[in-house]
Image 1 (cartoon, one colour):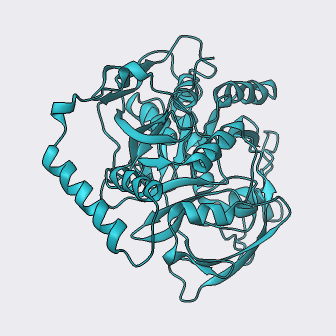
Image 2: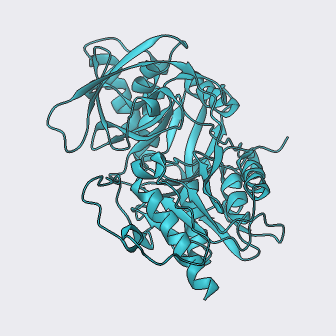
Length: 432
């Protein structure tokens, strides 16, 4: 069975969040073939630095206040070697490597958030749809100050992840500091088995569809095509909103497949790295689910990685209007390399680029139309008198048109309402 391609990524090498999946989404594993892993010859090793390493090792063994075994010291050295490269490279022990395997199976006990370290603070990158975290109202950029009674400032990222995972049905209390709020808030959640469906859809109004992709799993592209067919069974589509907000990414092939559902030809994404097998490019095929439906793509600061591939491709190909706020900016590719001892490496091996050659790394996707988050308040009072209210007014010879009531979803989601308005405007212009 051919392994899935690696996660595309985005990260600022010095400052962007170190991200892990905390009871979250599937991670695509790519085993790098052993012949491709260059092993330097013995005379290429930096002898002086190796001697210094051995000296430091010996002094720790002899003089540190507590006794430390050799295996722990060497593992810590390997962790430090990888963690200093960038926020996404890491040494994975057996437990962490197994955690990745469980994530790829799509079922695990947790609360459904992706977290990272930003400026040394445990930060919510994105809640996953229909999980305890999203139902409790956790938001991207929330700071997690405590997990139950444990302050997070003293925890590594993996230790925080381990604390948030647990048996389904068990309870966990998070202390959250939200930007713009003066006091922290406490949120109590009940862990669940996280089984996430990555795609859902509905009609906002007759002829206007809504397609939500919460993450990119191996079957996401097929599900997107199926949901488009469902929407079209209810009548022709005059426009579609593709919602990628708070989508933390996922499998690269799934991102390519979703973009391909709206493109008939052209480049979608390409990657560049030092090794030949990290240089890839992906183009759209002719089999397209929705090649001509007017399209608005919604993004925000929680849209990362594979979500940025889709938004960038559709933007560069001028296939969609990208609306919302600037995306996260994770443009690096990680490969998972198993080691002979049952442990592994997660190593950044390439950067990905949009069709126009833009690197999103630490930059993000700029929306074509910036719309900040908000809600619509409908004024109930002050109704003005209209012609139809006047006694003896002339009646129109046309059949009266039914006015669609503003749905609760559109009242609560200002960005979505603006996306729908834009689709309607595009249809007006196309008819003219």
